[in-house]
Amino acid sequence: MLTLGTIVMGAADVRRAAEFWSRALGYVPRDGEVDEDWTVLVPADGAGGPGIALGLSVSPVQERPRVHVDLYAADAAEQAAEVERLVALGARRVDWDSYPPDPDFVVLADPDGNRFCVIDTEHG
Image (cartoon, rainbow, N blue to C red):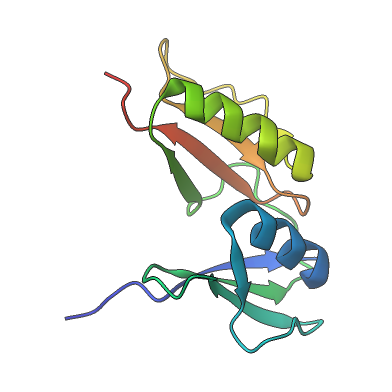
């Protein structure tokens, strides 16, 4: 059976992206250090879960990416707190024109512009 190993994202600045995602998720470089053109981040506590691979990229960020990362929050209060924490780390809010009337997600972009969502998993 296959398991999800890594989620791969392009970055114009791999070190900056690694700093953001390490602080956002509590991940560390799998090989102990961040290379300038490629790095894989894994959970610091050694727990299972997918890694985040960051590769140097010169291609533009997609306005509506086909693949993105969802980060789960336990409820609306945690979602709001995590969104604010991530923004303080360098993420930015995305003015998403496709929000449903009562969304369970907030769209953000990392410092390189990669879109991701913070999900309220308790949302009805």
